[in-house]
Amino acid sequence: GAVVSQHPSRVICKSGTSVKIECRSLDFQATTMFWYRQFPKKSLMLMATSNEGSKATYEQGVEKDKFLINHASLTLSTLTVTSAHPEDSSFYICSARPTGTGELFFGEGSRLTVL
Amino acid sequence: AQSVTQPDIHITVSEGASLELRCNYSYGATPYLFWYVQSPGQGLQLLLKYFSGDTLVQGIKGFEAEFKRSQSSFNLRKPSVHWSDAAEYFCAVGASGFGNEKLTFGTGTRLTIIP
Image (spheres, rainbow over the protein chains, first blue to last red):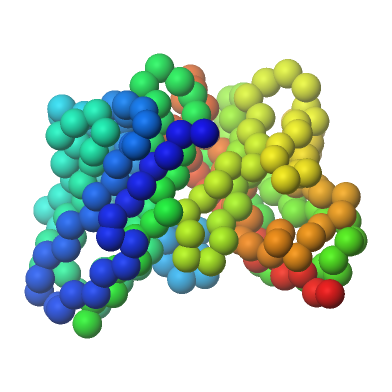
């Protein structure tokens, strides 16, 4: 199957700094990628839909100025957590759908810890 | 709005025993249904999906699920579990032509296997 890779898998940062998480589709092109957030012992919450070459679509309640999403190419979407605070600590997961297909593939996730 | 309910937060079964994980959904049109598995610290892996046709779908790792429209259910089953099946299982419903954009996830069921 298709592979979606996230980097870094784990990141620890100080409060007030910004952190960038990358999501790459390794062997397919994806015009659409999705970013999810997963709290401990909770389900996945869709944060935003990332569209190549256009602005991301954010779900209600998600701060677009805090969670910056860029989908600059057909194989890369980035999520930047700006001015991170401890409450932003979470597991962030991306997913991607190969262009023209119905299959959705998930990355392995990135665990962010803000001190 | 679509929603998914997984009534069982945690299930423990003996290795070799049969398994059924429950999933109920709420959606106004024909649902597109999925089961994903998540190992600790990992992303999600698709076990199986239902878009249309035969209501009993076969997935990977010996799992199957049955779509029952009258009960709004999509329960996951396995006749004989293995220790490696211990993980978190998520049911999800999709709402698009491809069936997997903007997935709504249930809260998950943690499966523990005892020897």
